[in-house]
Image 1 (cartoon, rainbow, N blue to C red):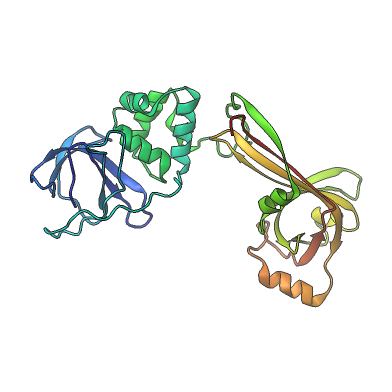
Image 2 (cartoon, one colour):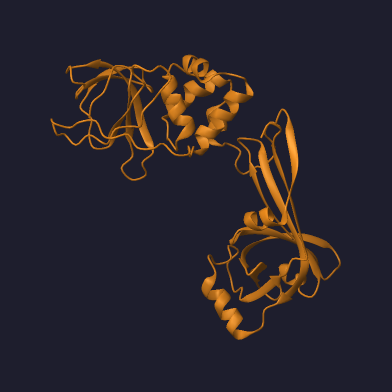
Length: 307
């Protein structure tokens, strides 16, 4: 492990790989950049002498080429002859929920990363790391970020997750785009949770969530004969699946319409049971398979107008 002044020392959880603590290297004790280091921790702003363990790595700030950054080095093994690890391709960023919420709020307020990092008293390179990777920042870091963005720690953590989606800020210039049948099939994917709209025995409309599978372009789900979803059998029904990204104020929905019927052929029932990804979340005896063969498949997506 070797570092330069200004690099970030990141301590990760051995179990999850999430960031437990981070700080800026403000002092070197060896000219070759090997440990130990003086680190200013982002959660306390204190400087301590650190001998990195196997759960630590360096997030290198660009040196010699402004604006560039390198991949974190491999964890420190304690070997004095350790050298720089070869940089690995970064690939497509895969941010965690907190990072996405931070980035979305920052963009909504038209703040640069540099300005946000300055307000939060942290390195812009660490803020970029947090926004682009599934990090787990400390409470102190979240408090400073929330203060810098004029929001709350609860909001950055996803507070209000039990509330109906769609209460966040709308996009400044939203675009509502119709989806083609092939994209609708892709979004339906192979399984998940969807909603079926039926008319109950007393003639009242009802919408019920069910765990579903997609087999040979047919939507199937398990229920009980006396349940509300069972009222779909023998009728044309609507089946809807959607996804809302509250942090980015984006989302999509797919609507399938078609006749519903009971799967009665024993071999077909056995194959469906064997291929099922999950048991029905509602629990209980739900061994009645219902299939919906869509005659209409439509969908829409909300995205920023510039995408």
